[in-house]
Length: 236
Image (tube, rainbow, N blue to C red):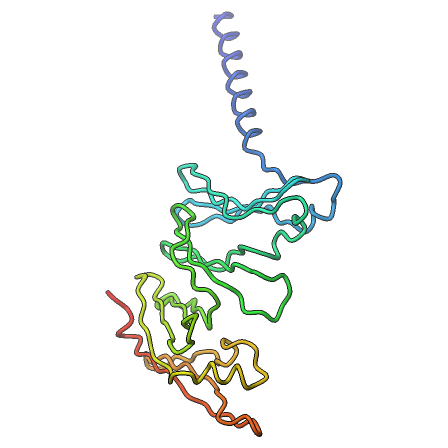
């Protein structure tokens, strides 16, 4: 009996050591002794998603990196910063915005200061890969019953696109040719997206209002709308 007890204790000890080593290997890199400011500015908290995937930053004194990890342990580094750019961590590139059924919406900042439209990307919640790169957008909805993104065509700015996130389908709506481009060229407005008001929804109709320049001497403005029937946008 004594031998059995001793063997059992040794077995428990071995299991404890194995568990301890396993936890140690999974410990995050989140510190830099020579740049203590990073310890406060880089958030290493883990964001957990409802399908078991997760997102987290790590950093050392030499670099920082954002990791997407799914429930099977597959890891994908979405972005990283080398030593000379490490202090821009969290101010440039990817920032998580919203979780949907099968996707994640991210900002992808190209400038660290304010005042510039932000690029958005839709990420697959299973593997962290980009499904849709929207560029700058007008609006994204967080309504549980109707998740969508509104954005303009990148070239002519003559097409408004409604992208339904859950079905991953696009619907396009025309804007009179050259109207928005002319407004940006001849007014003090710098970015086309800022010509639009926040959309309003009533009776399943989404109204997207925008202003445009009629004359530049003196500046005379007018307003118009794109009206979207939401019942037609949602595929059941």
